[in-house]
Image (cartoon, rainbow, N blue to C red; front, side, top):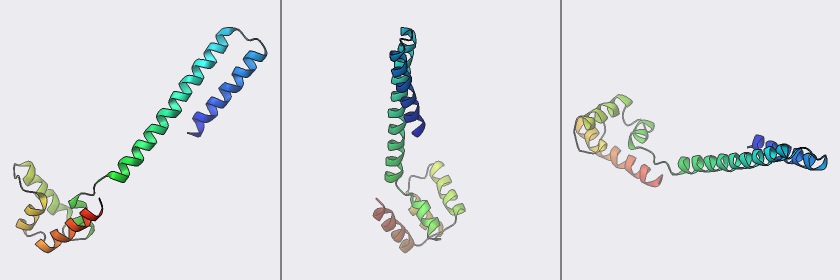
Length: 119
């Protein structure tokens, strides 16, 4: 971001010098076009940073992440449950893990409460 601002300042300085010393008009046009492009780049960069910040704040924590973090089950258990979903099991991952015996119903409830609080 600082680089974009620096480029715009340098181009503005060059534009002032170009007008002061009567440089050919082509140089002035090149400088103006470069300033516009740099400004667009600065605005777009700001937009991307803002979008990234919003997506990080609003990202929902996945149930599997919570279950692993709380050490209720292993990553392998979650992968097996996900494999069952891919194979066509329409149940939610928590139900599959309970049926597999990887977690208890109470652990599932705790993890769902944590997930709900994180929203």
